[in-house]
Image (cartoon, rainbow, N blue to C red; front, side):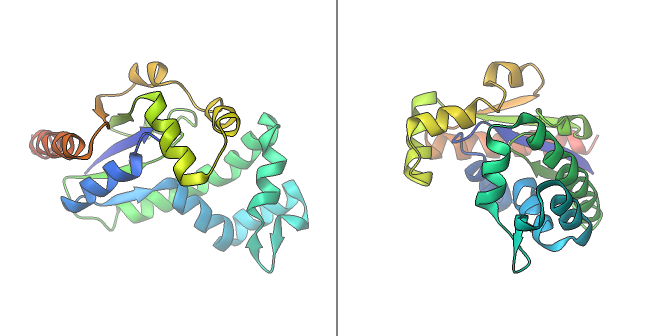
Length: 196
């Protein structure tokens, strides 16, 4: 069973693309969602986060997301330390999940697949892209973020140009019908190459 990484910058439409694959019966693992769950449920992860950020990292057993965001926003070092706690836990959770699947390939969807080196564990990588003005519009609608906030967050991610050098396929997500068609075509390729 092959692991197909799915990634893309903020607002590119990774979730939309993942859902199209899901409609085709492909098992999807959303790394960001798994990370959030593990930060709230895995005792080892919680203990490490508390020792890094203090007891105020949790309130009534739940992660204080705003507090953590404030801690890591201007501190690449703290962000890296947090990633070093969460990413290995997500990695082992993914392997347990993968072993329960029964399909030609599974999709591992992660926003920072390249930035964390997670792409090295994938057999193939699919990059989702969209025009920058479209991405900004989507993020403003989704998060009610200002342009400054969006640009500050985007600085933490690689550019599409950097990602293209390491990916095998690209899905351009401008309109849904075309995106869905690209997913269907890619699914055929992945199913057929997986049989060899």
